[in-house]
Image 1 (cartoon, rainbow, N blue to C red):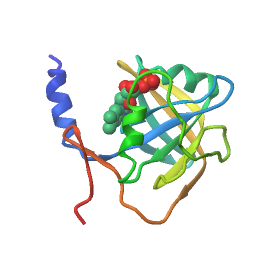
Image 2 (cartoon, rainbow, N blue to C red):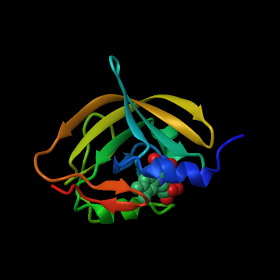
Image 3 (cartoon, helix red, strand yellow):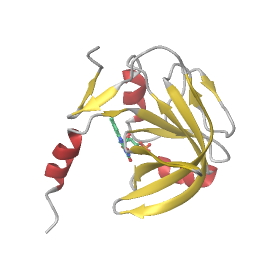
Image 4 (cartoon, rainbow, N blue to C red):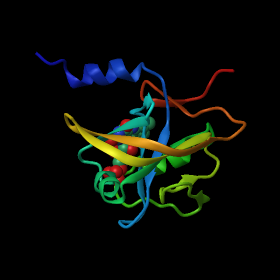
Length: 158
Ligand SMILES: Cc1cc2nc3c(=O)[nH]c(=O)nc-3n(C[C@H](O)[C@H](O)[C@H](O)COP(=O)(O)O)c2cc1C
């Protein structure tokens, strides 16, 4: 029998992660969501994946725009994380945005970003797995990551 989903949430909540905002832009317009189900998948070819809840409004934007950027947040970007963790149209106002190889917005002040073209969409239960081919990216100097652990935001101790 499958494990209680609350137990699974609690167990996986002990797996400390960084926090990203996955953005997309293109013919359908800009959208995005806060995500920590993000993993590097392959180096040759260069692939990463993001698991997106089927109820997420970002899903259709990702499929239509066929690109996304993974913005890895800095410790001082908790407000940005909260902003993109609310469902519905996203407020990009006040954010300094650029683009790289695709039309996906890159959020200034993040620790690093990976710019991806949509490579595949795979089934994953109540989520869909968006596999991106990494076509751009950069690491910016300075700053600690924003972390997520046991249901709350954290910072590196030192
Ligand atoms: C720290 C954190 C991590 C999250 N990780 C994910 C994730 O990996 N995948 C996902 O689908 N939702 C994740 N969420 C929830 C979405 O950000 C949230 O459901 C958002 O409202 C979706 O917006 P949308 O419906 O406009 O796409 C996360 C939320 C937080 C606060």
